[in-house]
Image 1: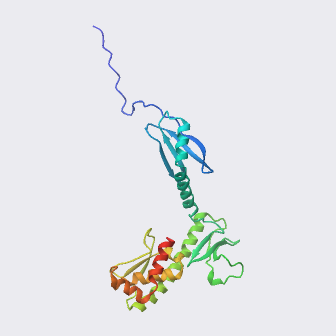
Image 2: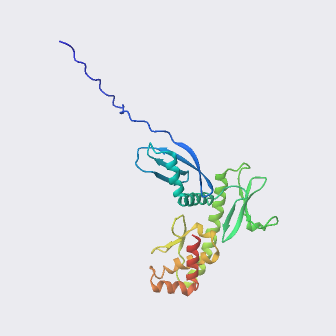
Image 3: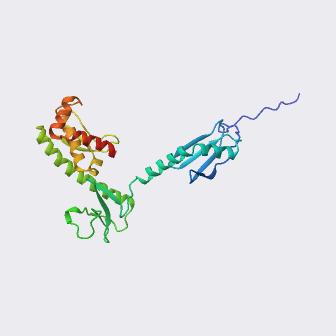
Length: 259
């Protein structure tokens, strides 16, 4: 009687073999007069796929499609590709640069990061050189070798200081005009709201509002404090806003325009 060979058991961590896909390729193409770099990937799919993000353009195609077909498709979608790449480029350029010489707005005016020889961060009006008044400068003691994180911290502290000071003053002004009790103020980091007000009398104002001009700050303050009288957006609410800020419609439109 012969011994029958039994198949060896598969190890628990052993995976079935799969066919290896081709590695990605770095390629370039001229689209609408612009030299565009892209990553070409061959994968198991039946149609071409394109993705554009912060890394650039990625094109995924079926394994056997010729390069000439890929380039013809890219040429047909050239307008869309160039537009989307430009949008991502603008998003990158809109990010703040935490470095000496960077410009940051305060109440609609440009201010510039300067660093003294002894490692002091100063925020000065961008169009003013030497002789800036002392009260217009924010000085924070930092090491002489400053990192981007240190400059960011200094600028953000500068913003928070001015936001609390300015917003508090405007809240006092409009609370008096509306005849309401002085609410608590808290700074907000909301992505989509400039301000909010709740029934407990707490007003949240987005710290980014301090970057805008004073007329827009006043509109948001008048808007939120009016909710202490009308906790809605009824006709009566807008009449309340208009009683202390007659140009609210123009300010509202302007604020939407600046994003």
